[in-house]
Length: 136
Image (tube, rainbow, N blue to C red):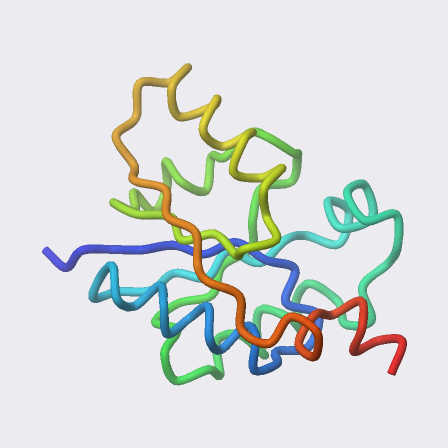
């Protein structure tokens, strides 16, 4: 069985920073699952509506050559049922996902799951950060 690695993100328009995350994630496994945040979750976490719908964002991410499968994330924050469904051995988080890292670490410990968490290095964050791109 291939070693599966997962990434989380809203992916509201895939940019080079996301692609750098995909490259780094692939260094930790042979199969990459991109977990795309739902519209409702984005609104709760970021207090704004994504430019693209969750369905459009899944399609955009699925079209990326390094992504084996793009799937919608959970309907509710901090449930992580998507991890139970896809059973990755590694989750590669973006450099700017510290709150997610803390929450996910606590959830993994509470549920006694052996999933390795790694953090990707930033790729030109002064350019490739959605909040900056959208202001552009």
